[in-house]
Length: 291
Length: 261
Image (cartoon, rainbow over all chains, first blue to last red; front, side, top):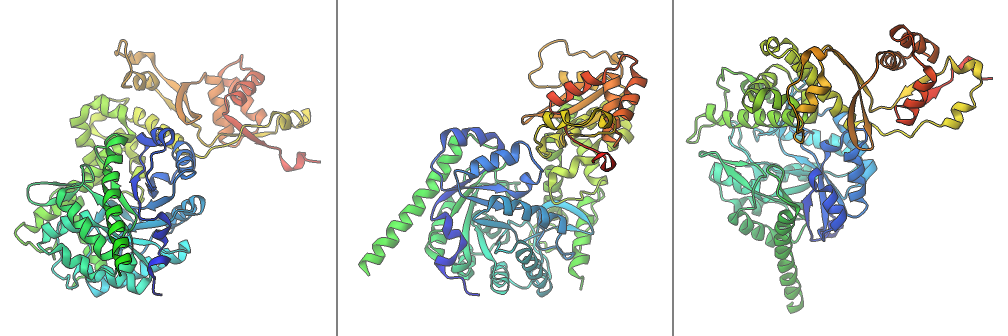
């Protein structure tokens, strides 16, 4: 199935910047109703059966479009997906009707043991088949398209022989899933593994990209680490601009999960992303008129 | 060549082994494969420590951040996580603490952890509408003793031979008073429940606790009353009903099938 630009589910969110929804900000968001385009919630944070988290997610959902972003589906697990996890995700999706549902190109469980982290895959034909089968199963079970996000990585496997950008493009081609392009993760991995991030962007099928993530990274002295605990770095903003020239203006999220700042700081980062999205849209319009 | 499953199994073993054996198939590219695996080990263990600290703030306060880090690491290495939701990772922490060497010095630590896990579960449990008093009033008197009452999903009962509620209270960040707890205050029976979105934990008298436990176990009202009276000869079932219906603890009841005309 070819996904044309206007058929992207992400189009529902518009070329708008969004913010991650975190519990300390619930009340302020509802009181101030800041003009962000949408919010993204971590699916697993709402796997409970009731109480405050689901109540506030519902109230926020009443005012904003929603994206549900998972960290625990483990799309790269050789063992396949957890039915229980899929079931909980489906319950959430049915209740909140999100514009987008996403998880990561990684694995996080083996032999029934979860590592609760975004672990790297070898980019092999076998891993490609596993990921495609799992993405297919998730989409069939949920009855909808999901987005798959590239992760930051701190190592590469010697049997990897497909570049990550070709691997993720092939996952989208084979399964019809959308892509969530994490520009910060591309930058972090490009530095860690010495590749040209523009080469990555060039290889991504633009029409599959339905969301962009921006976040801050850290360094442990040897490697850049994806921590989501800082403002977006200068080179990542630049790469964001490069990404927009290739994939067009897509919903863009500021991710900030650790050392959570005040809502005002988060909104200022989102406003910065919005400004760049607007510049791109204006330039695109001028280009269209001139043509 | 290793299969993907073998590779992932080996990777997980490398993450959780404190002796850090080499994991084959990792490229060095200027940083040793062991160091690269170590970046992931650091992330995984730190994720678990943070998740655990968020669930167990009173335990953190009792043992201090440093020793809590040691406990969290040992727990993560020993206790496999069974869910993609990291929030479930702490489920067996009280059992782990009960068997831990530190239990000899802080014998109440595991019970404080048990209380905090009950509070965590209560926080996320299903909501329930209040019990219909009109429906209850319509039950003929001869059937009342056989009614099976249901507690709100967010209710948890726990007993400790230590004053864990008092210990928990002095560990709260806003607590200002004498922080010494006399362990000879002794045992407590506690009910953890949600009021609105706030979780509260309160001490419950022996008779009421026995009856609540009986109801949770599926006993009918009359059997529950017998259990309560064994603990407290003054136990008043009418006052019990009124108290726990008003506070939203008893949320529903079932009439046995053979009692329905």
